[in-house]
Structures are given as structure tokens and as C-alpha cells.
Amino acid sequence: MQDRAHSAQTPSSPGKVRKVRGTGRKVLARPYAERTVSSLPLVFDAPKRGLPPRHLADLDPAGRREAVAALGEKPFRAEQLSRHYFAGHDVAQMTDLAPALRDLLSADLMPPLLTRVRDVECDDGATIKTLWRGHDGTLVESVLMRYPERTTVCVSSQAGCGMACPFCATGQAGLTRNLSTAEIVDQVVDAARTEAARGGRVSNVVFMGMGEPMANYARVVAAVRRMVDPAPHGLGLSQRNIVVSTVGLVPAVHKLTQEGLQVTLALSLHAPDDELRDTLVPVNTRWPVREVLEAAFGFTRATGRRLSIEYALIRDVNDQPWRADLLARRLAGKLVHVNLIPLNPTPGSEWDASPKVVEQEFVRRLRAAGVNTTVRDTRGREIAGACGQLRASHDAEVTAPVALRSRR
Ligand code: SF4
Image 1 (cartoon, rainbow, N blue to C red):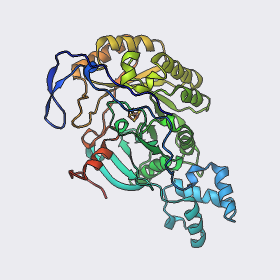
Image 2: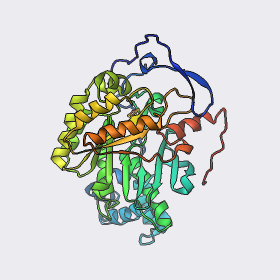
Image 3: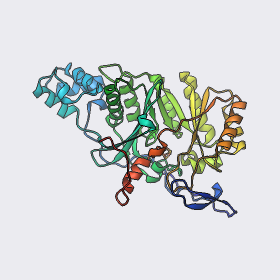
Image 4: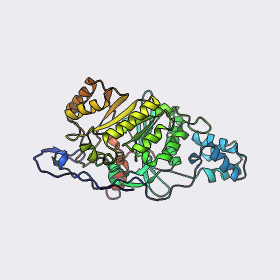
């Protein structure tokens, strides 16, 4: 399903000169209304490109038992195999299965999913961004972030994204395909293996990598279930430590509300008014601010979970004091937390983060209105931390190699 194209109005007015981050190039900092925002269509249905072969993580426990039985093996073998997979073991480590049996089961139920292209570290090793290649050559990213009190994996749910947000590298590259449930889970299993090797564990998962999770709804919800199912059926994470984000696909938010999951919903709002949000988050033309907030508040009423409002502060675009006040009015009295995100611009982009003083005033106004607000830690800035940037830099290497610190 595709929606109409979105483009900005182009009135003229003088602007200020400023440097483009990452290039030193000087540009005329045009008011938002003068920018060409996006001519990309919204794409809700992924192109019919092939998903990888079936993997045990695509199946629920009953499905895995059936699959093992179909191979002529005892159903309990499914639990043995699952225990090994979710513990991050490779086939050679499955020593409680005879070699011939382990080869048979792993060949059918554990096909290779994602191949590591590279790891890039920053923050003294506290942040590791991984670029993966799928079986069909598609590239996706995940990020492992170590904090003193938790370790979080940021996963991708789609290769690319069809939501066309103009400030986002992934959105500008379009949607390649949905990821399978197992491809999503595999990003977490790999991170858990990495952490286990150093005596740690993954505690949190955020669906804030590439893609719009609610546009790949069934696979994302199934992946959440694999993550929270206790061993041997899953990773045994707490539902409360999983954040599912959305730009506001209202029917999917209603559906998620009915799932009975105690996950946190993060709504990427980025503007409190339809006029701006229609262009900044083009899906707003389908489901406007009021409707999207109502759906999200409905999720919090049903689950008792606090809603997370994601708001990327963009210089001269959505950072005006009056927008802070309007946002505060829309959220007043609700169970919400606002995460202000200093924009991590794509090198060469005219989109830039708001100045600190503007950010502080935005925070002050929200807090003064009683809205719980923090400015998000921007992990991984020096390794292309915004979604889609590592993939973009990989593509660029074809003509311009860049020095990245690879672990493999
Ligand atoms: S910001 Fe999120 S929803 Fe928007 S295009 Fe980028 S990945 Fe998609």
C-alpha cells in the first residue's frame, strides 16, 4: 500500500549561514518551510522479497515440536535444540545430541540468518554497532550499549524503512524488506553471546534500529514473545525491559494493546502539531497527532505502562518554545515520559541538532508544565549512531573507503 508523496512548500525568505556537520561546508540555514522535505511515498507493505529459510526462532514451542516430529525425531529434541540456540551455542557445543542428529536438526531448524559484516566500537567499547548481511545481501544494523546498570540491544525490524521521515538516513533509502522473526531475535542472541563471553548479560531490548516495527507487526510481536519466553523456549527477558517503538500506525497500536504484553511503547512524535508532523513524520497524514496520541494513551491505560514520547530536537524545525508548550498541553496529566533526542545528523545533511541553550529551554518548559522529561544519552555518535548511517557509510565505501575500527 502506498500513500501520496509529500513535499514541502517553498516560499522564500533570508536564512543564516552555518557549517554542515561532518563536512565543514557552509550552507544557508533555510527555514524549515523552505526545505525540500521528501518526495518519497509511504510504503506500508514490504516488497515481496524472500525471507530467509525457516528457523526455530520463527516458531513457537508447539511449532518447533511439530517440526522436529516431522523429521522423525522425538518432540523433546525441540527443547534441547532451543536451549542451545537461545544460550548462543554453536552446533559443535550441542554435545547432548549425537553428531548425526545435531546435523540433521540444525540443518533444518537453524539455517544461517545474518552474517556479521563488521563491528564498530566507540565510547571505550561501551557501544558496539554491528552491520549484518542477510541471506539475500540486505544490510541491517544492531547496536549493543553497555551501561553501568543494564545492557541494551537496539534491534532492526526491517531492512530499510518505508516511513520516509526526511531527517532519517534509513527512511531516505526506502524499504528493502521485512526481517523475519528469527532475524530479529538473532540480533539479540548474538549480543547475549557477546555479553556472556565477558561475564555479562543482555537485560534490555529496544526496537529502535532500522524500520518501523508496527509495519512488520506479526513478526515483531512473535520476536518479543521469543525474547520473553523463559528457557528453554526463549531468552527469558523481562517484558518490562523491552521497548517497542512506532511512528504511529494507529491500527497496529490498538492491536498491540490487545496482546497483553507489558512492554513499553515508545511513540516517535517529533512534532506536536499536524502542520509540521505531516512533513517531518509523513505517516501523520494518515493518522494525525490527536489520533496517534489517543491510541498510545489507550495502550498505557490498558497496560499501566508509562508511554515514552520520542522527540528528536532539530534546529529551527521543531525546537521552538511554543512547540514545547503545545507538547506539554497535549501530554499534561498523562502517564508519559518525554525523551528528547539531540539529532544525530547524517554527514552533509542540512538537518542539525538544536543548540544546547534551545534544548535546555525546551526541557524547562516541559518540566515546568509537570511533564517528565529527559535528554537522551546519544550513544555512538562518532560511529554513525543514527539508524541507517553505518549501512550508508558501508555503501559509500565502494567509492570512498573509510577507516573504521573493526573487531573482525
Ligand atoms: S525515523 Fe524511524 S520510522 Fe522514520 S524513516 Fe527512520 S527508521 Fe523509519
